[in-house]
Picture 1 (cartoon, rainbow, N blue to C red):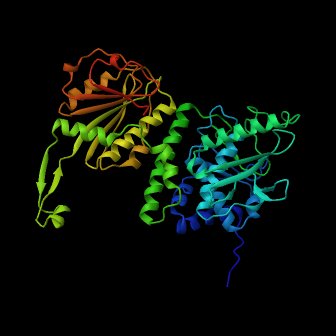
Picture 2: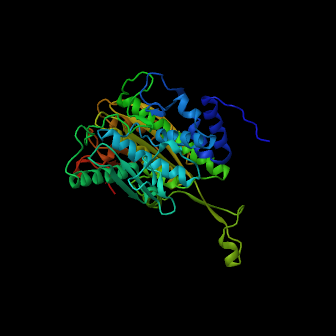
Picture 3: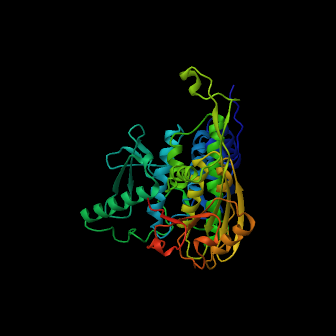
Length: 446
């Protein structure tokens, strides 16, 4: 017998998170990091909303009319916006088109995971076919999404995005923008009084959820750059933890690699570079017969395994005022890449501008710890103060890796330090690497 518990809207959301725990642990872990709040009565959005602080707002009447399965899809939809930093990374893009592109991206993930989206978020095309104005896939198997946009031209603009799951929302945004522009030209310009390109700041198509870009939904205040970066770091940590949690549970969602790729993919081939370095510097090697080599059976003789001592490196991350949010995100991705490159690497990661700030010891490829770093800085630049500090406190370290744009004063020479320096320069950093008087320098642009 099925018992109708008559759950109120908040209870339906809590139950949806509990249901996700059973069959979608990745999304459940993300949802548990959201703050659930009731939508203010005077707020114009009467469905759902998410802000840059990870608050998920719900309207009572909207949630009350949904089935429990639809509530589960809606909760997943909102937590993905936070996890993928949608309210933190929009920048100067048209907010309405950004909302559409972000919704297209997350809805494909939801549909591919077998969950539902509310029927009330659907609309009809001119031929009467039901599609989703927010981009519910027209054909999940073919990875396509078809929908309409209103208010940009005399007639609804039909949008088609293919291979959705292979694209970040920024790429989808570019495609939507291109199709809007093309069809506006074909229709002879935008609708009188309609929504023009670049003027959609904060507006949404009726009935859809709201993405409060760069804002605290409770106070309405804009987040500072430092606050936004802190939120981004928090959600990167949440993503890594959720990925590990779902892998441990044996229930990895479709497209997880796509979800993580943009945030966790380094540009430097660290394994190749570090192995070359280790070989060059003759990292200590020993042999063990406690665990036979995998080649023993094939060769018919009992062979030992190679045991390498752990490799130690110091990493200096530039957090001076010339380093923007995108560059800092790249730096964190590179630290992740270093951690993944070798299982026996021990890192001391220190954030430096003109002063030495936070410092963290990382071993055993502890990526969640990296993504949970608390970062401060934003002052002038003098990375050599940390090199001097390492010389005093850890002179036997063989290698120091510096992640920077290279705009730092150089007052030393190679013979001043007992360790090697590897300078990793951002794409927009100094152009002439010969300006760096000591160590080995590479560009991070591929």
